[in-house]
Structures are given as structure tokens and as C-alpha cells.
Length: 48
Image (cartoon, rainbow, N blue to C red; front, side, top):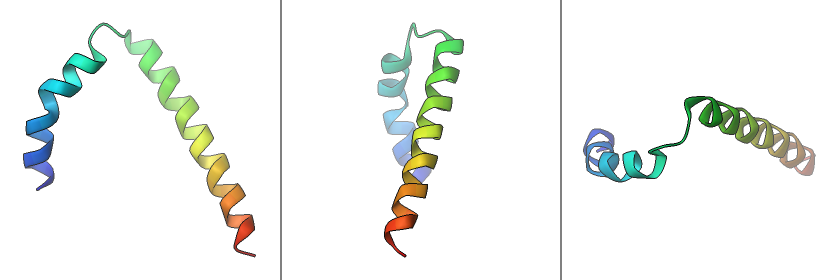
């Protein structure tokens, strides 16, 4: 199922990311990872 949905959405994904410099995508990935990590820490404290 993953392979099928990936193949079907690949053209859309390519259009969305088209023209965005690789460096910018890398920065965005790092920032989103940092935000997700911080959110995980915050949510973990709610469980205690």
C-alpha cells in the first residue's frame, strides 16, 4: 500500500517541492524535527 500511494502522489509531491532549493528543504527539515522533538518532550511530561 505504501508503494502504491507513494507512486500515485509522487507527481503532486514533485510539483509542491519544485523550485525550492535543497538547502532550504534541509533547513526546514531540521526545524520541523526540532519542533517535533520538543513537542514530544512536552507531551511526555503530561503523562506523568
